[in-house]
Each structure stands twice: as structure tokens, then as C-alpha cells.
Image (cartoon, rainbow, N blue to C red; front, side, top):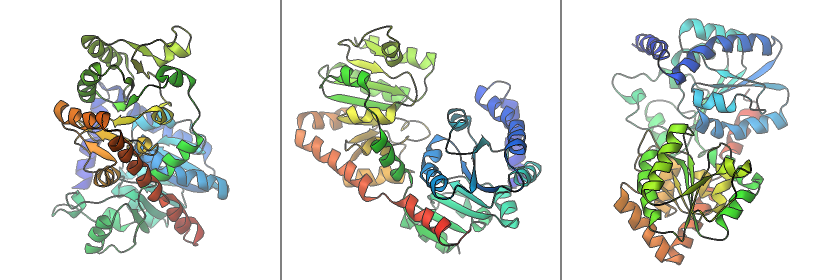
Length: 412
């Protein structure tokens, strides 16, 4: 059943590549993968393979890669992505020796990939469980680990029609919570340790290394600021009208998708609410100067993690789509974080809601109620921010626990 579904999915991707730029990049990237592996990995190389679906998973695996690079330079690090949104942004990542797409999980592709890559160890981040890759790698004696994974009874592994086979291939699974460990134990998988989310270690490191952004400092100019990170249309339709009524606040919008179409839609929505904006790159290029406009649109990548420091409140988008983006990236600065309803599959979001550092909104009314409370009660705003920051700091250390087990205890 898995093979049939996989071949149908693969054919679907190839057909979609005719119309979809994203699908086309995936299809075109597969032949490049084998060329890259053939040219970059030698038979004598010791290879540690990290696989991430996209950018979020990459950030979870990054602390392990960077520590491995520092402490065990004898390993050549291979990093693979499944999604173009991850590969295209991180294909030049200097922390890995080789970066490429992961070919589809068909038997022929799997054999070719493992023969060329010949990893000694493979670390799959969070949700990536490809049956043929895991089974074949296990048979080859590759040490297999799952990091920052999280499991729920609704996942296909635990349904009557599902299979536990992919999970049984791992030498060890490092999960985010006790519920995941218990669920796996109930299905006969005992090689499980609860360590939390390695992403928390990463956001702390990013915060400590963040550089000041003079453009943002000049734009904010001491005023209270709301930062909308990884913003999507449904979020923008809620918070833009709200802050049109609160002009004493500065608004920074960092869209998740930086395309001409999306930027134009943001500008149109701002104009409909009587607001003007300035683009980050226009200021950076000297085309315009920082003015008294209330809205700064960050129309470039790589700034958001440093921009959150200038906010009093943050919003993380995606909660009306497939799921919220990187909440810890904002919470690490000790500010309350808001997000939409698609947050149930994110452990850190659930924990932050429970501890009072984050808040869910479902529409314009619930958003206004949350923010009104913070704007009118400085103590409540301050308390929520402190709880968010305390959660991040008190739950750090997952990357160290994984690293010690994998690389320090003679497990590879």
C-alpha cells in the first residue's frame, strides 16, 4: 500500500511540475542530487547525514550540525531537504559539506542515494519518516536517530491501516514530550528519550549572536512596536485594521512569502486602512529615508530573528494555514507572542499558552480583546513577556542531550 501510494504521489509531483514552480524545482533537483553526491562524497569519507523537510526542521537540526562540525571535524556533514522552500534558502549553508534535495522514496532512488552517500549515521528531524530510506539504511548498518519528534494517536502509524515499520528502524528517538514517549512505548518501541525541542537551543544562540539593526532602531525610535513575523494574508486582515486605530504603535510586517503579489496585497490593505508604509530594502539602498510612517515592511530574508528584539508584542503567522511558524524565535526575547488557531501540533506553542506567555486568536474580535488588555495593562504585558522568555530558557538543552547520547556514548 505504501509503495502504491508513493508512486502515485511521485507521478503527481511530476505532473504538477508542469504548472508549479515549487514542484518543478523538486523534480529538477533530483538529478542534481546524484551528481552532487558523486562529486562531493568520496568512498573513504565518514558521513553524518541530516535530513530536514524544510526550514523549520533545519533550524531544529542546526545546533547538532554546528556542534558536530566543531567537535568532530572528521565527519563530512550531508544535509538534505525535501522542500524547495528549505533547500533554496539553505543550499549554501556553510555548516554542511554537502547540501542537496532528498530524492523520492522509491527503491531505485533509495539504493542510488545510499550507495553514493554511504552515511554512518543519519538524523531525521521531527516528522520525516520515509519507509524505504529507513529500512534500507537500517539494513546497511546505518545508525538512525529521530530528533525533536512528536507523536499523536491520530498519526497514521497508530491507525489500523498504518504501519509501525518506519519507527522500528530507529536506534533511538528523541521526542519532545512524555505523551510521545508513552505512545511509542505502548506500541513496543522503548528506545525513546524525552529531551524537548532542539529549536529552543537554536533560538537562544541566534539571540546571543544577533546584531543591532540601525534601520529598525531608527524606524521604531523608542515607540512601542508590534512585530508581525512570517505573516500571511489572513493574519494581515486582522492586525492591520487594528493598528490602523492605534497609530501610537509602530508596526513591522515581515511576510512569510516575499513576492510582488503578496507585497502588493499588503500595501493595498494598508492603504484601505489609511496607512502608509516604507520598505526595508528601499531604506537600505538609500532610495528613501526613514520617515514618520507607522509601518515598515521587511521585504527581504534574514532579518526577522533580530527584529523581534524591537517588539513589545509579536505575532507569528501561519495559524490560519498549514500551521504556525517559529514561535520560540520571538518568545526568546521575552515578549508575548500571538498566533492563529492552527497551533495544536506545536508543543512549544501549547506550553507557552499554558504558562501565559502566548495567546491564540481566532478572529478580529479575539485578537482585539487580547491586545487591548496588553495595551491597557502594562503589568499584564510585562508579566506575559517574562513568562515567554522564562519558558524558552528553562526548557533549553535538548540539543546537548541528543549530542551526548549520539556522539559521546560510543553509539556510532
